[in-house]
Amino acid sequence: MSKIEVKNIFKIFGPHSAKWLPAARDGISKEDLLAKSGHTLGLRDISLSIEEGSIYVIMGLSGSGKSTLIRHFNRLIEPSAGQILVDGVDVVSLGKRELEVFRQKTMSMVFQRFGLFPHRTVLDNAAYGLTVQGVPKAEREKRALHWLDQVGLNGFEKQYPHQLSGGMQQRVGLARALATDAEILLMDEAFSALDPLIRREMQDNLLQLQAKLNKTIVFITHDLDEALRLGNRIAILKDGELVQEGTPEDILLNPANDYVQAFLQDVNRTKVLNAAHAVNPPRLTLTMRSRPTHALDRMQALSFEYAPVLDGKRLAGVLTATDAQRAVEAGARDVSAYVEDLASVPATAGLDEVLARLVHSDQPVAVTGDDDEFIGMLSRKKVVDLVTPTLQEGTDGVEPSTASTQAVSSTDDSAVGKKESETTA
Ligand SMILES: Nc1ncnc2c1ncn2[C@@H]1O[C@H](COP(=O)(O)OP(=O)(O)O)[C@@H](O)[C@H]1O
Ligand SMILES: [Mg+2]
Image (cartoon, rainbow, N blue to C red):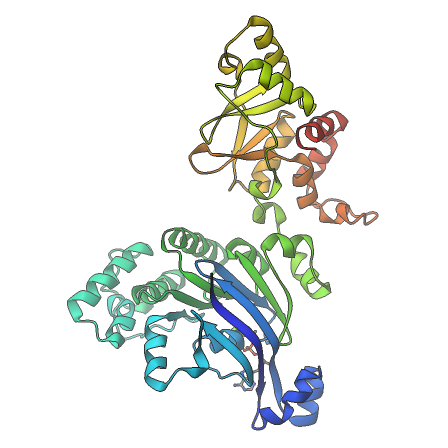
């Protein structure tokens, strides 16, 4: 279900925005509009849909309209045209009192510069949103302490912001936003002021929290690595226009234009993409109780050399066609005694880790989820395609960017390729 629905938003900054709306609709460029009218085109015809419980990233260079867009969500900015629906309600239709409640309860915001009060303690800062809501002192301190603990700041509640590092200050900002219990978190470049290592820690912290909380998070960044790590979907803005919207893979694999491509240049794909992106869905699985003749027939019909064997949803191992043949000849009742171990990687393993595994062995590898649940077989071809998009496009003379990539390409010889095409065709 979509939590936030943005429909054909235009925003023109200046005293006569209505007058210049038709020109903006007709596609006048940002520069021309400014030169002709002194008005700034903030956003042009933006439509997007943000799913409940997802992390939605809005990305673009400075001045592309990211903050302008997100400020429409809690109506810090009114659109020149268009609608913003939150839980199906048009935020522009809210009265003064409704808007106040909406801002306190439905959305909370985390800012780039932390926005903490210097003369209040960490605890008071974390409890601030609850103070505004009129929550009694004992209750708000209890809740603030809980959230400070959740962001890893247990024991710091009596300190003042200046006594904390930047990363810790931003944790306070996050605790304050979470303490209000708002369903939607708006995070405007929340991690951009942090050092790279701290920034990564904060990203991990946010992902861990999100796994428990299932908030709807709108996260602004100008950093594609961050966008790809955090986002379930990503919207890319340029000069107030939406140039691309999609999943991280959509963006990585099919950049819409040079502007998006330029962002991709410095991205370390092997860190961003994981084993789940390189899975072949299973076409044949067996169980420990499968009869040998049945198993052999199925494998032969599909020309498979092996098939994964499950125990419930869990991966139990692999049965090769040769062993299935032996089981038939031995008159075994089921295949269980012939099942061998099958190497596996977790779906969340980065492709860098996966690559390291692949260069050391040409054996099949399964991809597993939580509790060893079998997801599918790892596709060597997909791994290579994902880390070397330039090769996919057939660009001449462009080498894969990492040595490990080349190593896999060269081990992905016809024998391995054959095996793979046989198991996945
Ligand atoms: N209040 C305002 N008045 C006039 N122009 C504005 C105002 N706010 C933003 N803009 C302009 O709108 C464009 C988008 O700005 P902004 O949303 O802050 O970009 P970003 O957050 O992506 O860096 C910029 O050209 C900016 O100068
Ligand atoms: Mg901004």
